[in-house]
Length: 446
Image 1 (tube, rainbow, N blue to C red):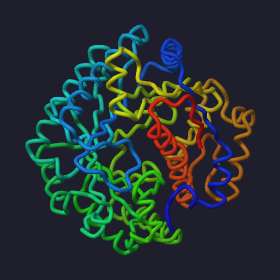
Image 2: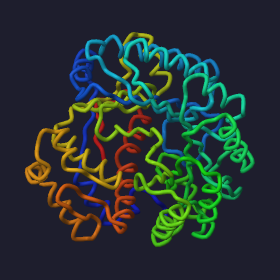
Image 3: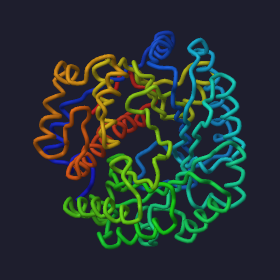
Image 4: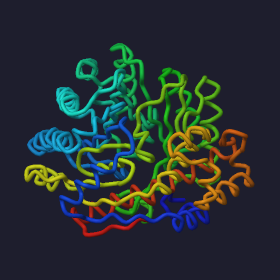
């Protein structure tokens, strides 16, 4: 099996017909007006994309470029300037940042001073919430004791370490440049430096990986007692080399759908044995704390900076150009680097809110009513979404109560399938189209 967007059968067929979004390139004035009027609340999350890497993994679907020192320096300066552009545009809204997440690429690559600059720039234009979460994704080989200490000094207080696997053969297949020893050293350095909030990323559905080997990986990860363990299947997209390598038989295909299910429930059960409870269908925590992934990407308000970053203020959604050079040029001209933007209705945002809460295993009707000013059951009847919820209940995926809906154990894997199909069909398709040309007139997904 190849775990691309066509691997999900009937589920994928209907899902792709249930949602469609068209991003258009608008003039600067119209774009600024859409963004400025798009925020649905004062408290916001921030996503920053750092696209540079020392090497390119053959399956990575995200916006990434080989590190070039001069271009990286220009990019970092442009990103600080982009923060200022949004600060001036939105200053009257009195927005307050509650959490910051930096993805990539390789966010652990630059000098930590960069993150100090980012925090200072954001603080100049926006209110920073007390107890702000500031998390970055990190490659193990970058996390020397000195680097980790400097990250803490710069204001970073959460780390997500891309271990992926504790077995060399899996790392080779994934094209990772770090060793098993690098991962162990990184975890120990983070512990010595006093980071309390640490996530380990672990990957499954790797070619030649068995269920038993995956369980061993989970056991090894749990032994280090990180705050959270996040599990990702290896997703395959047609615009990266791994797809053609598998199609040509140069790399074996992935485990079967049956093994996919076995691997998933092995994670649920084995991590539970170690005290890790699911906080989302793909992540497991030893406490109520959850690593600051882009938790508002589905419901907003989310302000996003950097090449290829996708923002969602709440009433609109936008994507920055995926070309680093075009991004730098746009900032130099004083123009927002938004390549595509679209309005988002209250109905779509409500459905996204429901999907996001079910990803976190439970939906409280009172929370929905507080957010949208409408009774939950009235909203789902009015939009027709009640039919989808009823179908999932009849399939045994959801359990309905007087005041809430909860995901069942059976529903966990169903949500896992629909969640990763959505990632392949929407965010990955957006990246594919905007990598093809930096400023397309219009892009429709899926």
